[in-house]
Structures are given as C-alpha cells and as structure tokens.
Image 1 (cartoon, rainbow, N blue to C red):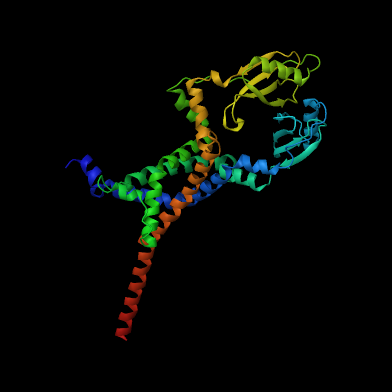
Image 2: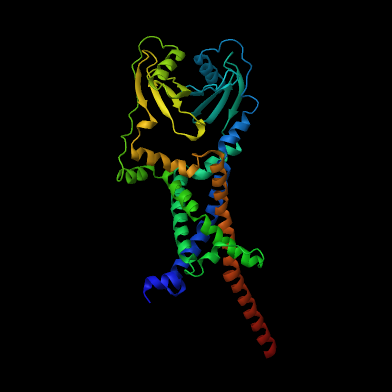
Amino acid sequence: MSLWTRALDQPKSIPARGWLFQIHLWMGLIVGLYAVAIGVTGSILMFHEELLDRVVHGAEHVQPAGAPRPIEDWAATVRQVTGHKGGVNITLPESPSHAARAMIYNNTGMQMVMVNPYDASVLRHYRHRGTFLQLTEQFHSNFFLARTGRVLNGFGGLSLVLLAITGLLIWWPGRKRWTRLTQIDFRASWKRINWDLHHSIGFWTWAGFVLISFTGVYFTWPQSFRSAIGSVAPLSAPPKPVRITPQGERRPIVDLLQTAAATLPDLRTVAVEVPANPREPLRVIKHGDGPRRYRTQSTVFVDPYRGDVLRVDDVRAKTTGDVLLSWVPALHAGSFGGMPIKVIYALLGLVFPLLFITGFVMWWLRVVRKQILNYEAAREATNVKASSLV
C-alpha cells in the first residue's frame, strides 16, 4: 500500500500524524485564550456601525425650516464644539428631514457630531474615546500595546492558520469514516457531544476560520500583502498627496459640489471632507446606487479656490490588483454583504472560543484528568504499602 493510499484510508498509521497532533495540541493551548479574546471582540465589532447608529438614535431627524445653512457653517460648529482644528468629514443628509453627521479623528480619538443643517446647531455630540466600543476596538486590534500589540496580533493570526491546517490533517479519519465526523450525536454522553462539537464545527467552519485569521494578518503587514498581490496582478501606484496654492478666497462648498457632481454624474455625492489646511483640497465622496455602507467609494479632489478638479479616484478604474487588495480587509471585516454577512461573521467569531473550550475539555479529560487519577492511585498504593510495613 502506497503512502498516499494509507493517508487516505488509514491516516492513523502515518507516523507524521503523531507530531502533527502534538503541534495542534500545544499550539491550541498556547494561543487558545488569544483565540477566545479575538473571536468574541470580533463578533461584537461586526455590529460596530449599528452600535454607533444607536448612539445617535433620536438625533438623525430634523424638521425642515427653510433653506439649509452653508456647509462651511456646519464645519465651523463641529470645530467649535470639539475643539478640533483639522479637517471635518461630513456625511450629507439623505433627505430634507435628515441631519448631517460629522466625524473628526485626532489624537483624542474619534468624535461624532449630529448637526441640524438648517441652523447649524448641535443635535448630539458623541465622544468615542473611553467607551466600551472604543476599548473593544483597541483591544481587538493591538491589546492596548500600540505597534507591539499589532505585531503580536499578526503572529497570532498566522498561528491560528497553522492551527487550522494541522487540525484538518489530524481530523481526517479515512474515506470510509469522514462523514461521521461532520455530524453531532446529541443522544450520546456529554463527553462524546463535546468531541463531536469540536470535530464537526471545526470541519464546517474551517474555510471561514482560515479566511478571517489570515486576512487579519493584513493589518499588521499590509505591504507584504501588497507585494504578494502585485506579483500576480497589476497594482496602481500609491497616489501622491494633493497640495494646492491658496489663491484668494475659497469658493462656496455648494459650488464645488456641483463641480464634483459633473465630474462623475452617474455617482451620488454622500460626503465631503472640509479641509482646515489652506493647502489641502476639498474631498468629495461619491457612491453608486445601493446601500452606501457596503461598497467602495470614489473620491473627487477639488481646488477650493479655483474650483478645478485636481484628481479623481474612480473605483471603476481600479486595476485587478487594486480590486484584490481592497477585498482583503473587506473579507476580514465582513463589510461587503449587509446584515446577513455580518450575522454569519459574528457566528464565525464565536467559533473561535467554542473550538478552544471543546478542545481544552478533551485535553483535560484525556491527559490531565488521567494523570491526576494515576497520581492519586500511585499515592494510595504507596500509603497502603507503608501501612502494611507498619
């Protein structure tokens, strides 16, 4: 019988299976708590946008009252209430009865301000720093350890990929028995159910487990992913920052939005980034039809003094490599298919602690508990022998 046939039909007879099992066991014990933490926090963060929506619930609607104030006034209000001196990203109202949502990012964390477009008043001011959601985000990305934590997260993701590969190899029972390990017998004892859960859930979620773990490594070493994708598909050169020379007074933002609308007429303007630096352009964010949260965006850079279009980053002009690269973080975050995908990803996140718990129980019952019982039996035998000598 060839080695390949033995591996397919009698995998337990392959010597390599023993050390693969040891790698899987000890790596699982080492990175198990990491898997629990990263899985649970990842499941929570799948609903990041929905949780932020709850924060501004009740402040997203306004009563129309005449003509809206200029967008410059909205930005001035945001800077006044937050103390922020830089650019302000403003999501434009979707209808006359909607408020504008402004976001700022600085060294004090993200802040979100809901603004009444008709009088430029503040409807809701949310500070993200120190909240449960912000702490969850930071813990998930770097464990409060800045770059060091990010690097540890990268190695953690690679360890989970190796854990999945060794798990699949030692899971294979042979061509005649493999379907049994894809099922759970809830009529069996709790030990057998625990064993079935680890093997069947691991099998059915294997691809998703590997996908989430591997794409998470991107956030630690994005340039490595870029180089790898660039070796098989063309990538656009990273765009250079757009800088301008101030020339007189800035034009009204509403006029600049009309210029951007004419540049990409088939796309809808959804947001604008109002610069504070006089040498920075106005950035206009545009989307196509459909829910804006689950799609990539196009950006039009406009000179706020002359009204000229300086650059257009059209998502439809991306190269094959650009598209592949953009899918890496999207596949990790599940930000491409709306609520059904979010629910699936959240459940996949809970698989991480489930596999660790069921695996730990098996190890405890098979190894630790057996050693404890053997130790107690040996000690009892020693006590009996000592008593007989007396």
